[in-house]
Image (cartoon, rainbow, N blue to C red; front, side, top):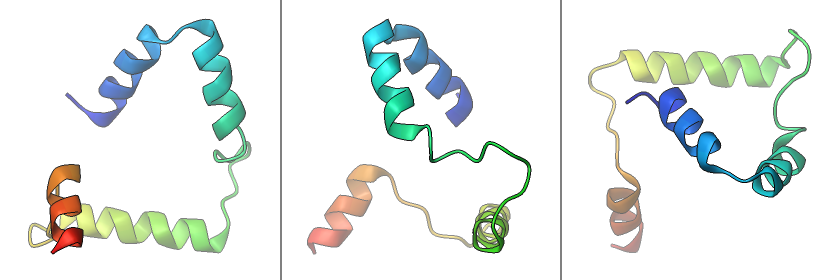
Length: 70
C-alpha cells in the first residue's frame, strides 16, 4: 500500500471533528499556490534523489528509535 493510499484509508476512518482538527493543524503546511520556496524545492529534489538511490539507508520508525537510543 502506498503512503497516499494509507493516508486516504486513515482519513476515511476519521470523524468530522477529527478531520477539522487535522485541517486546523496542517492548513499552513501545504502550499496553496504552485510556487514553492527555493528551500522547499531543494528539499524535494534531495528526497527524490535519495529515494531513487538504491544505496540509501532507510529505517522503520521502530528501527530509527532503537538506533537513536543506542
